Length: 155
Image 1 (cartoon, rainbow, N blue to C red):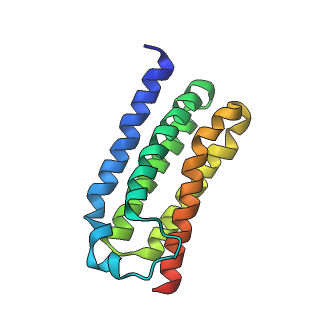
Image 2 (image 1 turned 30 degrees about the vertical axis):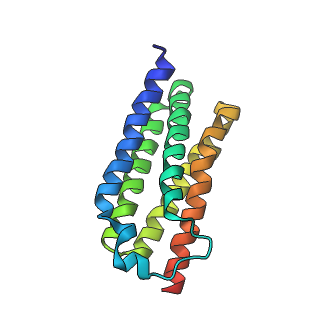
Image 3 (image 1 turned 90 degrees about the vertical axis):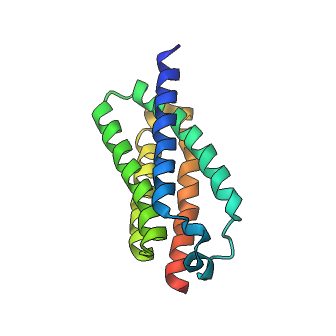
């Protein structure tokens, strides 16, 4: 088994672990009366899209991270940024869905978008076309941020 494949598997476990933890902390959030009663953006995707999107995003992100960790000389920086991303990703679910702190959730998702944007733009010269693997995550976070902001403004 190649070193790259081992890293892909490691990041798949870590990334899907983050999704599982976030899902646990959201406490059925998208199905609660509180969330269902919110005035949501007209461009809010149907519920099933979120699961499919996150599944695809985490596969792509795992491939991106495996390539980055193998090609980057600053491994501590990469692991630090990954850890920050992990914490922000998990904590958004808790703050937004469990505690109903929509403004604080927006601050978290905005910072998460900045971290993922740093991955995309900060390492693009080293990774070249491999950087495309993180684009779905970045685009999804832009969409999710807009959904969160719409809820702040319209509720």
